[in-house]
Image 1 (cartoon, rainbow, N blue to C red):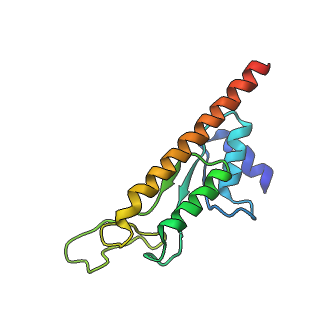
Image 2: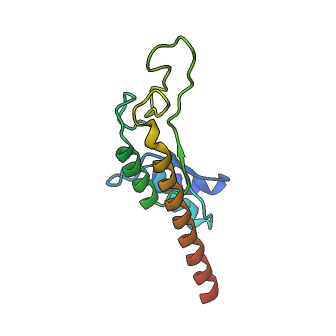
Amino acid sequence: MPPVTISSNAYADLAEGEGPQWKVVQASRWASSANHLFGRPVTSSETWTWLHSPVFRATPLDVKAEADLHFSAGDQPVIGQWVAVQCRGCGVSGWRFYAAAVFNDRNPWWNVMPDVTLYTQRISFSVAAGAARQRCRAVSAE
C-alpha cells in the first residue's frame, strides 16, 4: 500500500529502490519519493538486476537505458549488479549471478564498460548537483 511504503521509509537510514519501470510505480519511485518527503538528498538503487536475464544478453545501450530510467525516477547514485566471481576451471563464461547482466572479462562488451560507467558517473554527479541547487533555492526562498 503506497502510504505504508512511503511512511515505512521514514525509519530507514537510506531508502533504496530496485526496478526501473516507468509506467508502474516500483520500489525506486517509492524510495525516491519518500526520501524527497523526508529531506534526504540521496536515493540509491540496485540497478541492472534482471537486465535481460539470462545473463550475457544485455548490451551497453541496455545498461545506459536502464540507468536513465533510474535517474528519471529520482535515484542517484545507481549501484550496479553485474560482475560475477570468476574461477579457474569454471568454464568459458565462468560463474554468473542468475539475476543480473554480467559484464566481465569474458563478455565481448567488457572493453566499452569503462565508457558506460563514466557516463553513469557524470549523470549521477549532475543529478546530485541539480538537487543541491534546488535545496539551496528552497532555503533562500524561505
